[in-house]
Image (cartoon, rainbow, N blue to C red; front, top):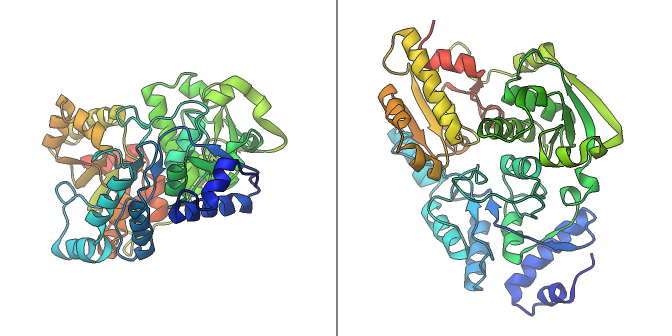
Length: 423
């Protein structure tokens, strides 16, 4: 890798041993992937490690060393959601013991460490940091040092920023250095599509199932999606952003997609069109039958497959403001249909802290509260990592949560019927 004089000085320890070790790690990581140079990070970071698991002792030692060296990120960063919210996601005594004393015993300590190296604020805990209410929204062409697969794929695809799928700690190192290796999705060639996805459904596909189908087919490759714009249009409205957020999260978790292009809709597809498609690109046709095949292929991981669900998580990734309002209307209508005043089981809707504060000022928040729905900024994945909590019959409309836990996936319309008690 070709380094500038300034970068060589850092590597040689001119700015301290700790920064030199960070630079060495980033350089060696880049060289593994054929990077020829480092490029400047142009905006705030987003970290995937938000949980203070006691076993992550090396992380806390590295963080202490970073703090002792006086290093801070040039831009304030955001981080994935917190793993605990006892106020809105109540737990039994044994659950709490496992969460607080065994699993996330270092949570308070780790958050203090994050604050010392550049955490944005107390509301910076969300997987949807790119939403306007949160404010960590990269511009077209920005270079990022992010991890969190659903955030990376959104930034690359919907915003036209540039970021590879980094792992935990590499996101911190890149943010601290203000430099990341140039390879993969940071290059023009790496952003070209090697799959053409032809959407031939009779109506707008369920975002989570369409994303799942594409992710499982293309894995880490870049797909160019044709035919979806006839349902979504060619403008990134709030509803379209919500759809693409969930679609992208499913491609990234059910596969390993870091970038997708939607013809006539996403910024690079609008600018370059089919020039983004490699000549030897493969074709995958998705129609109604294919979506149903994918949906029916999901395994039921519950010990008792016929168990009655006791908890429903909606919002993985975190819900947008428009999604909260939309779900309120749907639940209100569903309860009228079933003749119920409250939902039939515990329902937790998760959203960024800043969106939660905004939503709490609306009439719809009072409606959801009356219906028995709780609003939280917790990470459902971290909740289900608890072997006791995660073994309960949990349902969700999140393909990401389904993939990383034993939660059972249902389509939106079916989730609505279950939580509203519609027969």
